[in-house]
Amino acid sequence: MLGTVPIAVAGSIAVTLNLLTPAHAAAEAERERAPEKSDATGPQIRITGSFGQTATAASPAQTDTAAAPASYRVQTGDTVSTIASRFGLSTAAVLALNGLSWKSLIFPGQILALGGAAAPAPAPVPAPTPAPAHAPSATSYTVVRGDTISGIAAKFGLHTAAVLSANGLTGASVIFPGQRIAIPGVATAAVVTPKPVAAPAPVVTAPAPAPAPAIQPGQVVALTDEMRANASLIVRIGKREGVPAQGIVVALAAAAQESGLRNVRYGDRDSLGLFQQRPSTGWGTPDQVLDPTRATLAFYGGANNPNKGRTRGLLDIPNWPAMSVTQAAQAVQISAFPDAYAKWEASARAWLAQLG
Image (cartoon, rainbow, N blue to C red):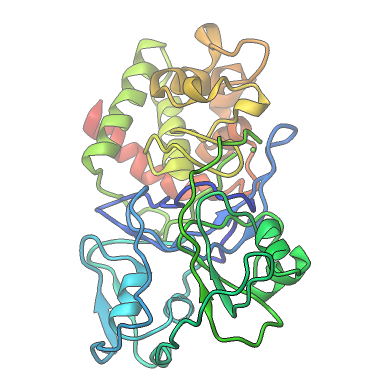
């Protein structure tokens, strides 16, 4: 699966599902939320462990690395980037060697191939005296909070398209603090790392990228404590609202795909929360969509839909019980990845059995 993802810094795409404490090679997907949402694929550069926990790439000054084995068993807390750094490999090469994308999840106990993945990182280059602020000179740039690709391009007197192309990004890609951005056409081998600045107020603008976990259809993912708490809430509200078991399975699968069953405070554009609902398309204020109870009621819809007349929940969709789990979830979420929910069906049914 190749990754997907908007340009503004949206926080850490620490979007892993944190499934069995997974480590997440994150990427972005901008989804079509017709007519409310739009998703498109685009790689993400930053690799995260659990949601909100960023695994920073090894410093250039780190030259002592263990010889890469032919394979490696993922441990709790590992991320693709930290594994690659540990053995002097590039993250991109490890992803490619294992058929993963920038947004794939890895899980404790999973075996990753490492043999011959990539050459060790080059020796560090001492950073020269920073160039004047109006004309930075660097082969790469370290993103700080508040940066955008267009703003970075302007600092170097480049077109935004040139910087996107040099980094394999698209107009929908997300960049993150600490991420290295290649600056095309600059000869000086310097790395400009500006001092962090206060983050500007968040701009409400679209839905979160759909995570693409490295799981197989039929696989049942174990619940972490955080996932269990949110899954229990979805089950409890579903039963209280009289939602059939099939509808609760749909809600669990949708939340697992959208947020990893975590109430994340970031997403593609303005998407937030368990179901990555968008304030800009009528799902509520940011605080409202970050309220797991309200977000779940909005997903179910029906008589107690908090967004009556603005958004449509599962119970508002005609003949939804005749649909498959993925079709029903897609009818509510309107994702550019209509089949993405199917891989969660086995887990959702197992979770309902455990929590019901």
